[in-house]
Image (cartoon, rainbow, N blue to C red; front, side):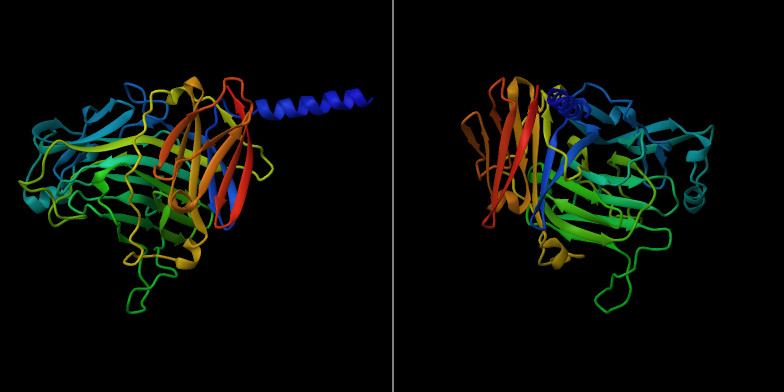
Length: 408
């Protein structure tokens, strides 16, 4: 009888470890003296030579008459494990669809459409997720270039009127500022005051200590049922208290602004083209139940990825920042991600105060792998038949440990 019970327990354990996703990266988030585990849910590493059409689609409306540009598929390039959203200056005549005609703009400029064709001076790139997503942690590694009038963005919209989350909007001439925002059906002004004490909508430009174009940044948007938090390289930068109940699509794009319109100014003769908005990956994480054991599984799709986020340091300038909630942000200490690559390499990335102040090591088979404190990313190789690693994080005189199963 006892042996049957033992076999049953072993079968249950085996089922537990084999019933997860086909591969699993891990993310650990240190928050309020708790080490929270997040499992990989979805995303794109952009390591293929073409767009993953199962995950992404192009925009429904491609022409923006008022801003003088069109979204083209040719403005999305894939190379060296990156997707490049190109902003190009090139006068072109395009065939347009009836729903792309901006009658208000045509009336304002006293222009007319002939044979459903229109001349535009710029072209840009955009992709939209096929699927709508909801609560979770959205991680984007990216790099931008300077250029007055250029407007890269990472945002969420599901089709509901006036319901949108803007992870970030950037301008090429604002090289150390990030714009975050939300749009709500009944306004997003609850609990937010301006300097005069009146209600004001959430959103605005947030200063950073370093220039965005100097290196790759890791940007995270954490969407919870009753709040949204924005992070730059593991440091909280903005906080919104409110609920977005509807799932939304993920948008990645670059575009051009226009003088006298939203996000003005537009480009001038000093703006260099092509302009590049580079994205290394989009990773979507879901928080794991406390009782779940961490499992690190092989992710062959990441085998060609390279270390890009090394010594570059950038963080919010909290002394001048908007929407800075000191009490809420004091609970945030940073994140650590782990990915198992081909060749038994473990890729580790550490952000936030955890990178600056934490001591991190991994122990397995009697070998200790220590994380160097002067870099944001590093790799180490584990023995081929290693089945378990112990993660140890020392932070503010406390030690957090996790036993991690390894599955090749």
